[in-house]
Image 1 (tube, rainbow, N blue to C red):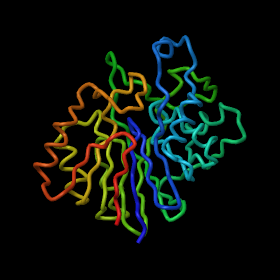
Image 2 (image 1 turned 45 degrees about the vertical axis):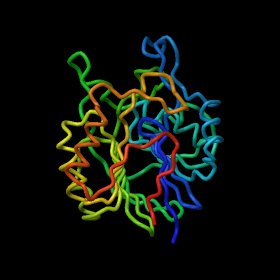
Image 3 (image 1 turned 90 degrees about the vertical axis):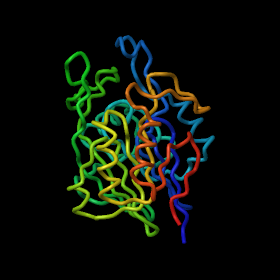
Length: 279
């Protein structure tokens, strides 16, 4: 039997690994500053910071990198993780534009196809398209469009593009990873009616009930791991001291899930700490 672990590295950044292979989703260590928000400075990956995190946490077996969509909190560091590790950045047309903007041949990319599976080591990853919940700012939908072909690392160039979630199958079990807060059950159920683990973002969710009645109730996982709850507006803190995004109330989400599903293990992850999923 092979051990399979997951580690969370702030926001939506997750590494799923067995003894041979690491797969990383939504790497984000670089933070936007006020100068980026004001469009007075380019927003590129902080390569020394990314390198230091990879080294500290022995992320030296990364074979695949995925970004759930092209917003900067999901895509900003993915090209540089690919460069530093030699792993493949699995892209869509939007995140490919971001990767190519670095003009670095060491960044290897392959385009994903909706509902198609990718084999990375013992992990079979099925890529599924979904709709991103609206992010309303001053009455408008924030950064909702495609990434422009003339992408130039301005903060507002990191448009949403397409949005994805993933069914991850390993000989030891099934994992559903979805950084969206509204369940896309019909899509998942075309492939499976049950999973062992759900890893789900809880930001911008319509309600705690939507989370509880969604994947957790319908797919009956043994383990639920919350992500995308910390405030990424602040500086990256490798010590793991985080405040919550406005409106998230992670403790409320966890308590609601524990009350509704006492037979399941509900986890609020800690930065960089291994969580054993299988066996």
